Length: 91
Image (cartoon, rainbow, N blue to C red):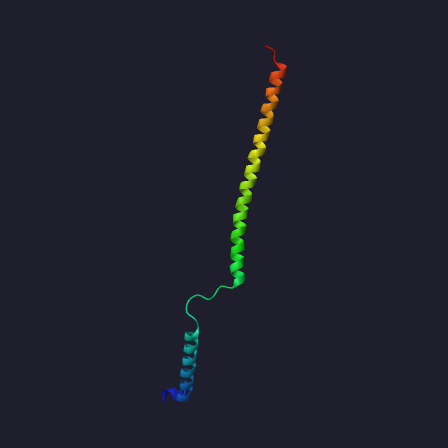
């Protein structure tokens, strides 16, 4: 009586049960575990890791070039100082 007073009939409850069962079957039909990764997402991840590695390599190369420049300047200065010491001094 309560169900009829609220407008619920046994046929409606049967339809709800069928819908519930169909949803459960659909959910159980899906493969378990992670969804497969899209090949584009996989490639994007690979390229991002490569960019990070190459940026690190570039920073190292810049530091090496900087050190080489300073060393070259120092050696040039030492060569100039030694040339002026040899040519300008008298013993």
